[in-house]
Image (cartoon, rainbow, N blue to C red; front, top):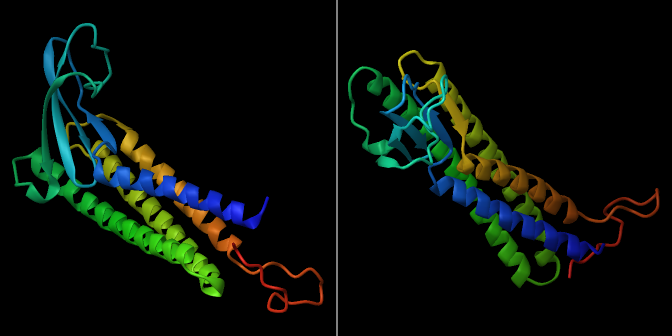
Length: 230
């Protein structure tokens, strides 16, 4: 396969990774939390959240939806939903104080790291744009920082995912909250996909932009004939 074709494939994968990561950042279905349900024909309160807000949903559990030992939900059931941005949280009482403070602290950290990921993606995109519009050696040279920026974006995405995972773990393990069950939702899956695609494709783009290996053992990489990316 020609080197130019490989670079085009890497750029396509990067575009998909950026779309996944952007979708994860702007949506609020990273994790779903459920309280215990004692009996059916009652209303329970499940929650889902992202980097910026937490949404609570009041769900009426019928006999058909009730499963003993399971939490409230599934979250797809109809119900009234109330969403609150983390910066707008006001202190409540008892468990709500712990819940809001804990979630706010972790999510601010995860959101800040995700912004770094977006910033690296923008820088990488600018380098790719410069590479597409440039000529000669400058065109090839811009592929190297582009690959590094996208790899850094993937690393930031991974850190954001880990912070969010620790947030959910602390919420579930705490005795001061009502949540007993959880699962990661589609926004979390988008962030995971974004991390993998950005990191691997960024590294691949960086490797592809490197000078070609010398054909003879007595040559050095500097002596080898440069390979132009058309």
